[in-house]
Length: 179
Image 1 (cartoon, rainbow, N blue to C red):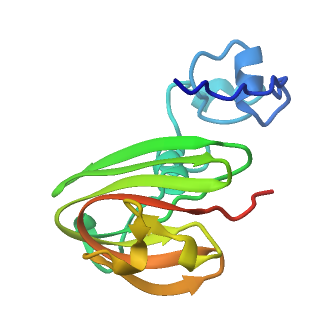
Image 2 (cartoon, rainbow, N blue to C red):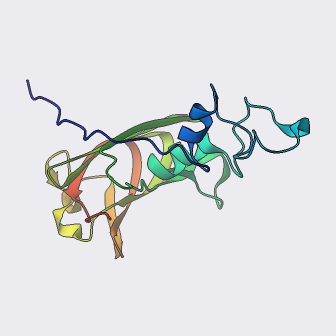
């Protein structure tokens, strides 16, 4: 059994704005506003996830990469584009749509981005694999260029872009170095 790498210990940020600040001030949920403890108490609910946007949506859209296509509402066609950040090593996200559950689970291991995703029945997706080397992209161990239902579209900056039909995929590629 492979042992998981140890995570370096870090001291959480406890100054505003940060979630560590909310915890240090006794918060047990995400505050509606960063300045909840210093502003007029008239609008200081602690159970809402507003923070100038929807934090939950940011998790599955940005980290998990699950986006709707504005040209095809209802997730008939979706855009899957995860954005690894910092030293984050893995993410698992899902979204239930009218056609089924969209899944995106990625991890980075030894400089390789491994991404398992599910595109529900009767839908299609544009998939952005984060790599600057389209030739390094594989799907279930085969070159992605030779897999039925996977069509290479183009290389755009640090992403190899594919169109895929419904199904479950297991992409892998050399990852773009992150800062």
